[in-house]
Structure formats: structure tokens, C-alpha cells
Amino acid sequence: MNIVICIKQVPDTAEVRINPETNTLIREGVPSIINPYDTHAIEAGLQIREAACGKAVVLTMGPPQAEAALREAISMGVDEAVLLTDLGHLIHPCEGGRKARCRHHSLRQAGHRRRHGAGWPGDG
Image (cartoon, rainbow, N blue to C red; front, top):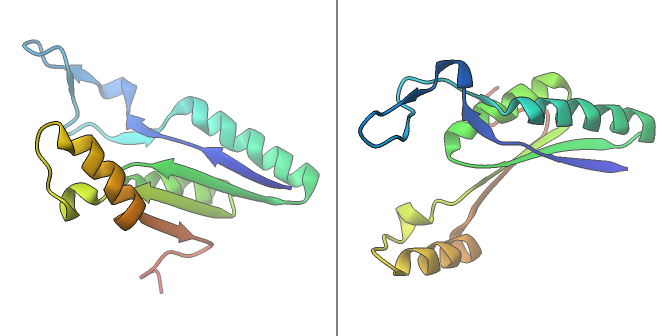
């Protein structure tokens, strides 16, 4: 049985600061981590994989920096990692209300999917 585990990289809540003027998170200088609940999901997925003699694949959607979360998941024992990144905003610059439609088009036509097994490109 193959297990797919969805995770998300989030700001470390121990170091979150709020902008007093906009009441939004200040992400600059705050390290990103795997959502703590998602680490529990990884552990549960690994236990199921062991019991069912299958493969565990971790999946996340985010910017290229989310690769760090995938590397951490691989270090925890998952077999493969998949990063879904919408690079459409770099390929098809959009403005205003066309942005959502353009991103949808970008995902369909030029979405970036990186799938990695035990090694990562450039790891020699």
C-alpha cells in the first residue's frame, strides 16, 4: 500500500511577530518548519507503511524554499517527496482580476512539479 502524506511549511510559532499597524505576520527572519501536526501525520504514515509493506510519499505545495520541509521529511524516513510549485507568476505576469485565471492556466500549462526519491539533484 502506498501512503501519501500532505504537509505544509509554516512559520515557527515560537518566533512569530505581528506587525502592529497591519496586524499581519512578519515572516522576515522567522524560520519555517513543518507544521507540527503534519509531523504526527508523517509518523502515522510511516507506521502504516511498515505494517502494509508499501511506500510513503510526502507532498507539499509552496515556494521552492519548501524543499527544506521535504528534505526533513525524507530524513524522518519517507521514501519520496513531491513539491508542487506554481511558477506561473514568473512565466505569465498578470494584473488585477486576471491573476486567478492566469495562475490556473499556468498550473495547467507550465506548472512545476519536482519529484525526488532518495537523492536530490546536485547532491552528487
